[in-house]
Length: 360
Image 1: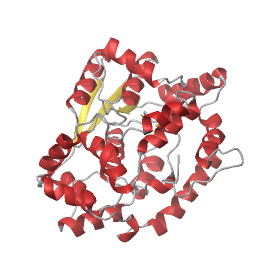
Image 2: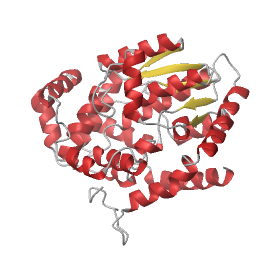
Image 3: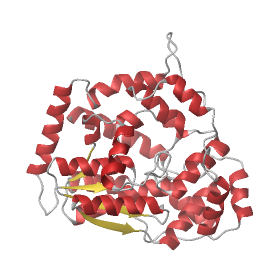
């Protein structure tokens, strides 16, 4: 990590606040003791199996990536019966679609796709791109949460199993991204750059979060924190046993995410997502620092035909390549340049976290 995290600080040993926070939090999230982890996992699985009220005892959001694929495999080993759901925003790589279908077929899990209204969703995405804020993936982040909770509620499913895990994602500076649950930010940006209102988009704002969590009793659980998770070994297993097709970098199962994380964000905002990922892996013991520094010498888009990716993105949005280049080269802006509800949401979520931590 470096000064691209503007809040970074270092202690007398040269360790930054991100790494120190990682080590402070990981023991309660993913204990070193195998016995303690197994006890926490058994308690979690027991809760899932005892409290299901429908055909399915849980829901897994499938992206076609390694994390969610491994989550599905473990669910089968644990005797769970999940409904696998893919939020289709129109940017799936062919590999990711193939991975989801192969895996669900081999595991004999029911699978359904939540397909977004492309005309509206692409208009929202393009508006956010034109706004020049760094949070270009907010529309997808919101849609994933909104669609999974909507389907879980419809099927009376109380538990969503997330593929997120502290070992590979524990470090991510708060100052890099603004909270994606700000409905006002998205609607104001979309109205400014498209002149249209949003009708079909599956929002997941604080009102819906309160409804789903406290009235419908839906909880998100992260079992990968309680198992040994060596991503490289898992990838080898997926390829050899489940006909898995590797798509390259982290989250590159989505072509738009590949464009954003590998090119747009590093080039336009000096935000290299690899620094957080590698730092997490170093702290987890899956990578050493010198290896990470060597990898960071390469451009984030190394090995990617970024010219073809930009042509694909422009064509998908039905804009010219020159228009896309103008968007890329426009001066960066902040979410604070647009109407938002941070003044209200920040204290609200701080209070929520305190209540959650107290109850846990």
